[in-house]
Amino acid sequence: MESQEENKTHHVPKWLKLIQENSWELELLISGGAIFTLFQVSDIWVQWLQSASFISFLPGRNMILLIGALGIEILKIGFISHLLLRAFWLSMVCINYAFPGGINKDKIKWKKPFKISVKENEDLQSPIVKVDRYCGLVIYLSVISTFLLAGIVFGIFCLVTLPTILFGELSGIYGIAVGSIFIFYVLDLLLGGLFRKIPYLSYLSFPFFSFFDILTFRVLYQKSAFLFFSNVPKIKFVISACLFFSFAITLSYLNTYRIMKWPNAFDSRQYKWQMSDGVFISPNSYRNTQRDGYHHYMSIQSKIVHDNYLDLFIPYDVHADEILDLSKKKKENRKLTQVFSISIDDSLYTDLSWNNQWSNSVNDIGISCFVPIGHLADGAHTLRIHLNSYFIPIVEKIYNNRTIEEFIEGWPIVFVKDTKVDINR
Picture 1 (cartoon, one colour):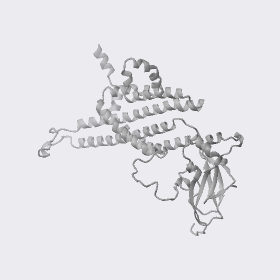
Picture 2 (cartoon, rainbow, N blue to C red):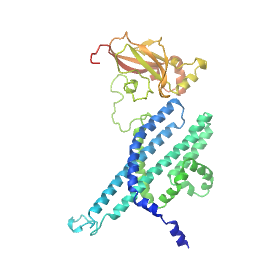
Picture 3 (cartoon, one colour):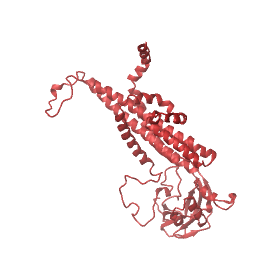
Picture 4 (cartoon, rainbow, N blue to C red):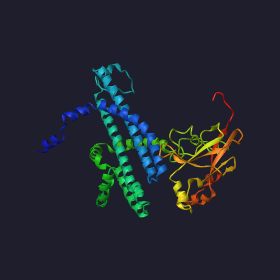
């Protein structure tokens, strides 16, 4: 009776068997399309989160950014590895078809101590089947790893970001309690359910883990994870997973270290911060060299200016609200223009006429003004955007008394005035 039920349980329908045996065409199509899409999505994800944080406070943003970037890189590596393995598999199928008689061992005349580890007339059927299984495992692990990370991101959003947006700053007790339980849950997730195997502790963790299983999408792939982990060699899997994740973490780091303001660990140049005594020139300071539609920096029209004015733009970042909220002025009298002052070559400009500037994107709004430079001689000059002295103690309070020398000295933008008529221009 048990044997009949077992056979019934493990019976594979013909349509499913046909898909399993001929899935390589669909796999190649999916992998090719996914690789192309993921290389586009990688930059979009980073830019989207940076833009979102520009207009709204997003608690947990950095964790969401890093985990999301890691998930994208895992998918990239997984689909590229799958494509390479499937191409290798296809090459073996082709050569096996071209020579159906198998290996002619007599024609391989290696001498000792080299060994010929094949049998007479042996074909490639066994390695073909093995590589085919590896292809399935690689694509499964890539997709499931991304589901896992997407679930963690969704959990952080629901437990941290969303409550803060709806109810304001959360209490320390809530943060410590929920954070500790969630970290405990994530460790259990990464360790293959280790804490669920411990007697008594399983009863204590059950209500929390059951809730998090739904919140992090674990219920969607748990059965397939049981199938995988109950059959895979544990040591080989751990070694492979460590190598896989190390590579993915490295790539995600390279994609996010700039926005996170981390140093480039792969840049071994020792004197890049003391190359000269001049100021730092960034392409983001000039709108003609910025990325299209990406105006999140204080900027002028170009590095070489042929006009008698500078078209200065200062973006409105949500963090400016923190500064204005601590001002003693009435709310209706608070202006972003009160925060900044402008100087060129140590000459302060106090009578500038500021305007509100909106672009087609809700992210790119701010204030702008035309700074007259007709009286300046042709040549190099430095414009600086200063923090007004009234707001210096406010900024010190917000940033925990960290040094604010760059605010006092002013953010520099170097430009060259060139009003000579150029007939070729």
